[in-house]
Image (cartoon, rainbow, N blue to C red; front, side, top):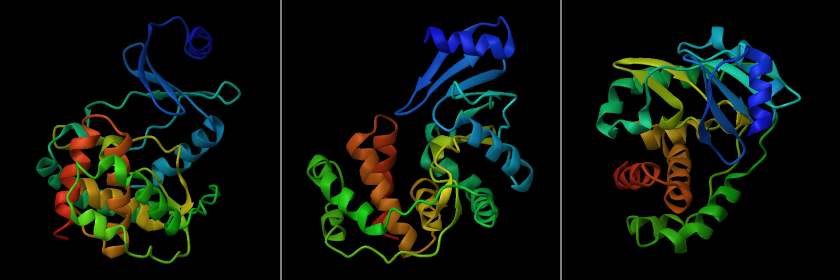
Length: 241
């Protein structure tokens, strides 16, 4: 952590730095009153991606103000408001149309992102492995779903890769930022559609429903609150989709 503080102060000067969040492969700090510093792999590539994406999509995307690629550090403007994961699912409906327009714009972007070759069959295998951990927490119909075959692979396009409600921030009725582009790749567009189907009750069809169910099971098995409650509620809805 001390090394991170030194990198931040070298980039932005002597300002207060406070730990904010920790993920599987990243650490985030509040920097002064209006910035955040994010440490993780691929910082240089993500900085270039954010600068390219921001002017080409219909919702705000934070653009780095300073980068230390060697240290894995991005300094970005802090997105105001709260994550939509903290809002009850019915309240998210007012943002569903904007998210549908946003993902459509993302999927036509041309960018040399890494290729995600994970086949749907691998998603299904992982979901089956998690079943013993979640069977007492989720609706019973899920077991029958897991007996089905996975959908076939499709041609990849540019995707956000982790477009869940936790990465969409709002202030009142305004979306203030779509964050965390570290999983952006050339992949199956239904990966993005599935998370939107899970969290925003959008309907992108059966292929997206497959990913919606798989990601919900992952959150139930390995997530914390409010991820677990959100995922269980999504599975209740997905039974009727």
